[in-house]
Length: 286
Ligand code: ADP
Image 1 (tube, helix red, strand yellow):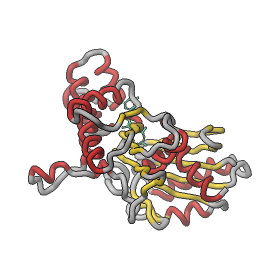
Image 2 (cartoon, protein in one colour):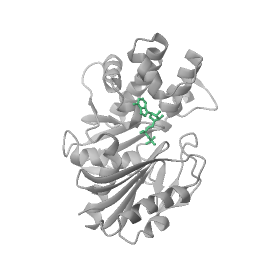
Image 3 (cartoon, protein in one colour):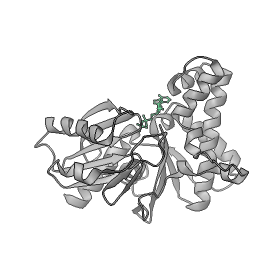
Image 4 (cartoon, helix red, strand yellow):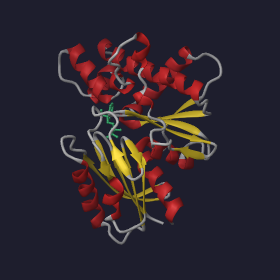
């Protein structure tokens, strides 16, 4: 059965026809950050119309909190969504549908089609934000308010008495790497350009990438003590960048000697979210 799947992230929106783990057709468009959810969903609908008749269920995954059909942004620095009736918007597709948080969807995708099929796991996306998903006892943990796995919202600053604590994700993800890189080099940088210069041996760039990886490693340590999963799978635009997972693994080994979860790179790469939410919809409706 073929599912229409869309993944609306803080930087990009992916729309695809998905069958199992195969992408039959796909389109990638930028998420216009200054725009609003109705506009983002309308552009998904527009692409979907080109494929009408080719799918029997729809599946949408978005960054932020998904609960009782509503979508709400959790960190406005990642994507600004006040409260949007996603279920009502998707019902216009005229087929049965499912909606999920993006990292939860990706966790489900890796559980079904990842490098250790059927394994319990924690999935981390290091992208515009830092999201997570938990599969435990073979089930996707969504939480009572859809918030389960929002690890990027942990606030380490609380311990240092900072009364305006920053979410963890504001100091590790793509926008942070770009900002830190621009400051250090006194030139405008993107996350990608910082990674490229780290690879060619620029010390300032290497330090920023290592700082991000070391912070994500410390998050993996906290996750190990909370959930103790057999594996932690890392994806997202930053997570998938060459060498990043190796670097997280190295820091994790230093920060948590002895037994710990194995850290793996996402098998489904940038399609983890759409494949996961499509599988979730197919299992429920087809
Ligand atoms: P979204 O957050 O919309 O789901 P991504 O997972 O692609 O999208 O993450 C986007 C972030 O990843 C951006 O900050 C972008 O700069 C960064 N990024 C994308 N590709 C790369 C790359 N090859 N190397 C480093 N950073 C990247």
